Length: 133
Image 1 (cartoon, rainbow, N blue to C red):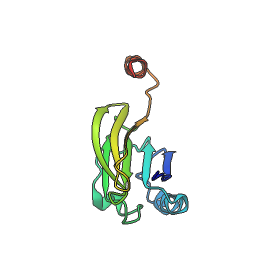
Image 2: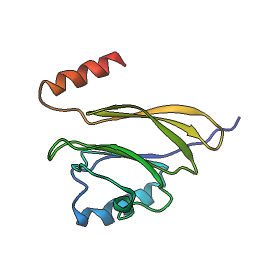
Image 3: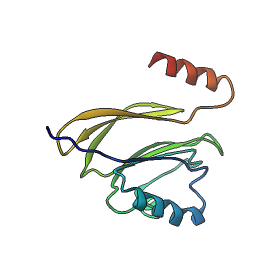
Image 4: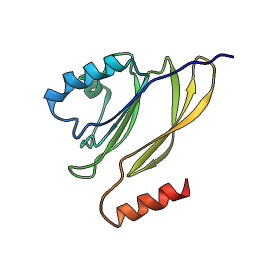
């Protein structure tokens, strides 16, 4: 059987727009030897590949994100397309679901990463979404 273990780095970053965090984030990504990075509470409304290059190794070449709502929230998922093909299958203000297919053995699985809101009505919507899963 072709088994393979993959690492996923998941981190509530509490803001990704601070330049002083970029080196620490890069160091943690490299230390983890991960293939997928999930960052919550990115506190950013616009993300592009040139921004990602400031803190991710170049092997990470695909991403999707949910922008922050003002100065809070936001989710970013970044992956290495040599290891995984990824396709976004659900996007909510509080959650991102991506279907990943291993380039090694073609196994497909779904990753859901969330950043739950603290106040209603968004909190109730989030809890109802979770219950429906």
